[in-house]
Amino acid sequence: MKSDIQSINEDISEIKHILHELILHHDAGEMMKLSNRSLHRFLQDEPDIYTLDDAKVVYRFKKQYQ
Image 1 (cartoon, rainbow, N blue to C red):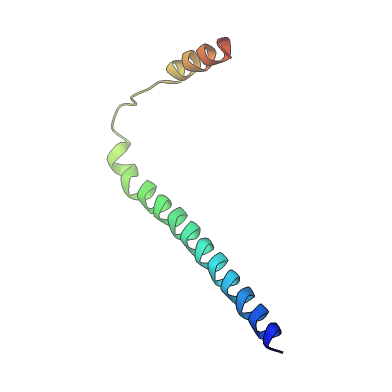
Image 2: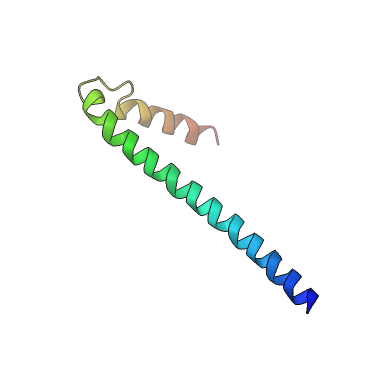
């Protein structure tokens, strides 16, 4: 009986850990969404630092040297 209780306690501890990780993951995602929404208006008029052509050059360079 004691071993069953110990096993249950270990399982509960593991479940608590998993739930904690899920909550942290969910909270991080929500914070990123909020940040994206709040910064959207501020950043929409800012020029892009890199263009699509810049990204194509980097991709071609990496692909060439792999």
